[in-house]
Amino acid sequence: AAFPSVVCFEDAWETGHGDLMVMSVLSLLLCPIPFLVGCAYATCKYSQEVQRGQRQLTDRFRFLFVRWALGKHHCGLLLLAKQLLIALSPTLVSVFRLSRLSQMFLLLAVLLGWLLFVLKVRPWRSAVVNTVDAATGLLLVFLNFAAAAFLGFDDKPSGG
Image (tube, rainbow, N blue to C red):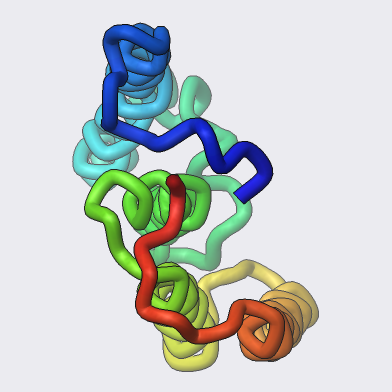
């Protein structure tokens, strides 16, 4: 650890760490979670709105639907969920006091799940983009394995 004197969750309120934890939870609840919920709502309503010929929802959430092949409009929400899980993986491992090996397995599960999804469903509109996404996912899996060599697989919890 860079600062071994700072121990997460111990004396949190005396050291000011508790205030930062509250701010981070509030930030998470105010920004990414409502955005993800709004995108989930738009994804659920997408088929109905297209059948009715309503363009307001589809124009408003164009970033979520325009890149995907026909009938695969749900993939935008899955991509957002994947990115959120990747971004939150260090925090989840730290909060639940799991080992660094657990973080690696969480990342591998997310990356391999998305890779298998892309290979099976081919969600992107272009075949080239499907291939590039699969190749990039495979590269990230290999990079994760390469980084594992530097972790030192002690069973100590990470993050403090």
